[in-house]
Length: 151
Image (cartoon, rainbow, N blue to C red; front, side, top):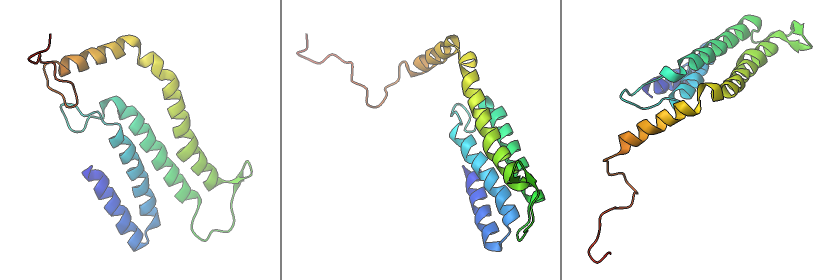
């Protein structure tokens, strides 16, 4: 979470300085950082990205490639554009690398998940969760002691 705070502060500084190229890269990293931190499984370590390392890496790569391509194909004040499929190249790059590729990746992952997250794996996760909770007094659970007068 500290890294997200540092990125947010960096975005503010880049905005104040008017460095929009740096701001776009920092914003891309900030988005990826928020997505990555929201999918962290808190275990024995504070930061465990192991199950999502590939997804976060691909998302980072597509965002950084998209931002780099936009800045290579477009400059502020530009009035003439090269078109592909009737769309300016920078806009097409933005649509493909920052929107379509992550969207297709998420759809493919969701279609592939049933093969990855089979019933056997889910049962194993549930068994580990139950064994971790045994013997603990958890909040909002009914007290299972026998009271006087109860038959």
